[in-house]
Length: 239
Image (cartoon, helix red, strand yellow):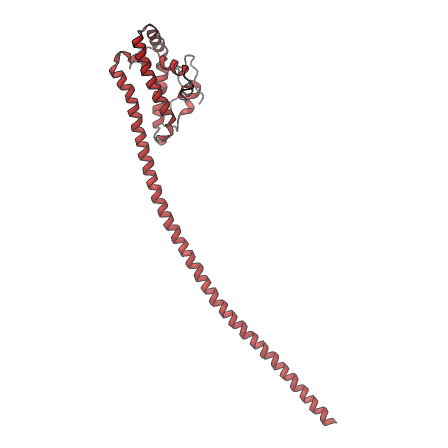
C-alpha cells in the first residue's frame, strides 16, 4: 500500500512538471507568435510610412505644378487686363475726338463748350453770356449747338458707365472726370440738356456738385471742390 502511494505521488509530480512545462512552452509559443506579428507589423508600418512619404512628395509636386500653372494663367490674365485697359483708353480718346472735330468744323461755337484760355471772366459770367447768346441765336446755330451738346453728353454717359475699366492706379478716370466737370460747369446748354433728360443719362445726376466728388476712383488727380457755374452759390461738395 505504501509503495502504491509513493508511485501515485511520483506520477502527480510528473504530471505537475509536465503541466508547468506545457505552460512554459505555451508562453514561449505565444511570445514567438507575438514576435512574428510585431515583425510583420514593423514591415507593414515601414511600408505604410514609405507610402505616406511618397504621397506627400507627390502632393508637393502636384501643388508646385499647380502653382506654376496658376502663375502662368495669372500672368496671361494680367496681360489681357492691361491690353483691355489700353484699348479702353484709346476708345475714350477716339470718342472725345468727335467733340474736338466738331469744334474744329465750327470754331465759332467754341464759347458754348469751353471758356477761352486765359480769359478774365468767371465761370458764371461765361455761363450767363453763352446762355444769352444761345437765346438770341438763329435756329441753325441752336441746332448745331444741340448736336454738339448731345454728342458730348453721349460720350460722358458712356465713359461714366465704363469708368472702372481704366487703370485706377494712374488716376486716368479722374482726369476724364475733371474734364467732364469743366464741360458741365462751363456749358449751360449742356447742363440744361442733361437736366431735361435725366432719365436718359446716368451721369446727369452724378455731375451735380453734391455728388461729383464721390465719382472719383482712387486719389490720383482728384480735384477738390470749387466754385463753378454749375455751383453758383459756392457750395462745395462733401469730401
